[in-house]
Image (cartoon, rainbow, N blue to C red; front, side, top):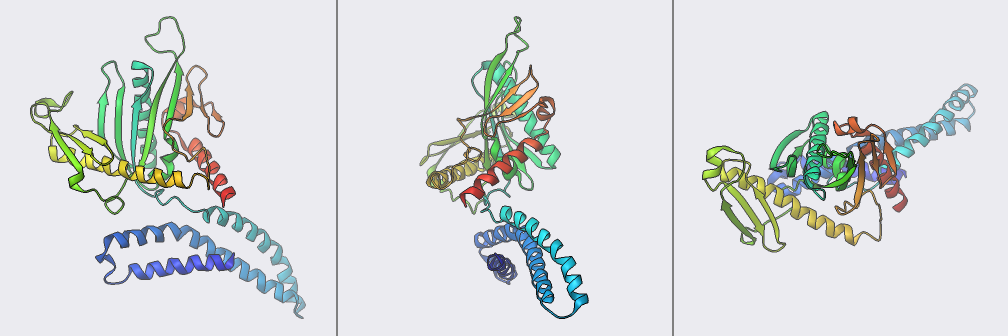
Length: 353
């Protein structure tokens, strides 16, 4: 354990030295990679130094017990019990910190919410989920930027895409990907029957230029007149953008801005993140046999959670967690659910190590 921790501390110091070199920023791709690794090791190094100090102190006290000084032996005897207990607690912390970390956890995220089966009721539920995540983002102090918002004529939304910028945004929200199901009585339902509808959520790590290289020759870019609200300028000029990535067939549209240039920038940001996700999914499939975790699959077709309004409960089916605090959750209080999912994922990771 000590050798492993010492190696981590050495690597952390080595990275700091490399980043401080005068020419370190000449290769921004390499510098960003080093900075990310250095940041990911910081908490582990802090706990590792504590553990090594405690371990060394314990070794010293045990040597004193074998000595001849009765006063020092008595002092060492009193300390040893506390040091051993402290070492056990620190080992548990280190086991979690030594779990290979998802390198994307610290990234910003692109959140996509779409209405699924259930017509207008599904669109209304999609809007509820969209608001829930915005409220959660507010509680976290994150910056929010709407990339695309497609409203439904009967109320609610067909699709919403938002960029969330803040510490650990992707790491906290990544378990939200999948199908969310709602059970409730729609306002238009006169007989009081409970309807079931659904919405899908996709959470993507926001890809940076260093993560994904996009060749302009692989893109087909179309412009067209925006539809819906936005004023005369939006509708009379071809400001809306549709970008097709020919190798993968991915299509991204954006019409929220009156400027074609701004719409293109937003569409490229979403496209870059979707391409990055495609690459990550390939890697996950290759590692599927090595580690299987229902929590971390990110499978959008999987029903992950049910929101039952008549009973005021929310059930996460992956970890069999049921909470009777639906109103709080819909108002963005997701902390308990997210922490439970993270804990389950950590357990699965520790079993796989």
